Image (cartoon, rainbow, N blue to C red):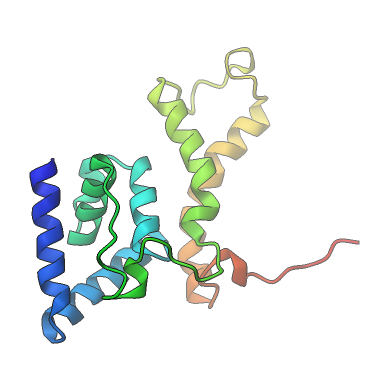
Length: 167
């Protein structure tokens, strides 16, 4: 894995150092990957990869690189001067959709890893009543389905949603 990670990093660095078409292509790919994973920065994609299997991350170069970096526990420190979204700390001041939904997705993945399933709703086993269990399982799917529509409506992050005061 270390050799693959090193080669992916070298390829990214070579492409990004050129101010011509290769850099534009790489940045366009990064933008598509950020949109796909609902993230605000490459660092956040690396964090997101903790929840995904290798086979889920092979769709494009940036996903593969992020998964390889996550599995190798390597941080990218050389790239911030090439593009701010590649920096080790990305500060937009906004909470991305991926970050906002990560906890519930992480919970579902952990339950599945210990052989839990949506059919296994025994409240004595899980400590959840039937309604809570159904909400938890449906919540991730509902958010995944609605986030593209929210983004298309101009809500690029959860911070962009209007806040309504309850009385």
